[in-house]
Length: 334
Image 1 (cartoon, rainbow, N blue to C red):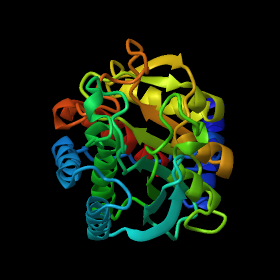
Image 2: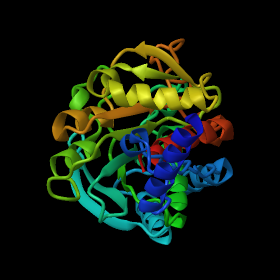
Image 3: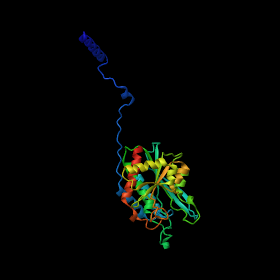
Image 4: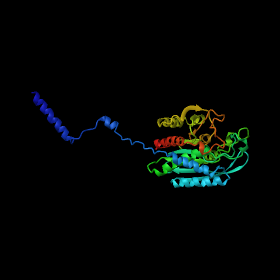
C-alpha cells in the first residue's frame, strides 16, 4: 500500500540523519567558495592644517641652501620631527659638486616605518631650495636664493604629516621609506653648461648608494610642487614611460576621492626630476606628482624659481588633496 511505502522511506531517512549525528552537510559550493569576511579599509584623514604649518616652518628657516646655517638648522628640525613620529632615521651625508664647481655639503634624510617588512613603498621629495631666482622678472634679484614654499617645502610638508599619521597608527604594517633628497634644485640655469644631470644631485647619490644595501620597493611616489592654489597635476611623461601602472592607479584613486579637478588625466611632456634617476639608476618604478602650468614658458607655475614662491601661493585644499590621495594609496596597499 502507498502509505506503507512512504512510512518505510521516512524511517530510513530518520535512521540516516541519526547516523550522521543530525548535522547538516555543507554544499560543494560552500567548500569551494567559503564565505570570507573582508575587513573594510579604514583610511585616516589627512590634516591639511598640520601640513601647512610644516611648510611655513621650513620657510621660516629661510632658503635651505647647502653650506649655510639655515640648511643645518632645517635638517636638524626635520630629523627631530621624524624621530618624534617614531621613524627609524638615517642621515646620508655627501658632497655634491654643483655645475659651477662649488662643493655642496649635502644631506639626504631617510625616515623608515615598519623596517621588518620587506614589502616597501618609497615616498620622496626634495628639501633644498634654489640658490638663484633665474626666472624672477626682477633681474636685480637674480642672485638671491628663493624661499621655496612650493618648490621643495610643499612636498616635505605633506610627507611630514603622512609620517605623523603612520607613526600613530600601530595597525599599519606596510613598509614605508620617506626619502628627502638634498641638492635637487642646484642645476645649471638655461643657457649655461651643465645639462640635465646637473640637477637632482641628492637622488642621483641615493640611487647609486641607497640607505640599505640592495634596497627594493614596489613603487615610488615623488612629490614636487604640490602646494600651490588651483594646481594641475598631469600624467607627466617620464612617469608614464617608467611607471604607467602606478600613475594610473594613483590618478584613479584621486578621481574616486573627488579630486579629479586637480589630477588631470592628460599626458604631458617628460621632465628630468628626482624620479628620473630613481627609475633609471635603481630601477624602482616611480611617478612624479608635479604641478604643470602649460600657459607659462617653463610649463610650471608663475612663481617657479622666483621670489613669489612664498607662503602666499600655498593652498591648504591642494595639500589636503595630495596628502589624502597618497595616504589612500598606502592604506590600500597595506
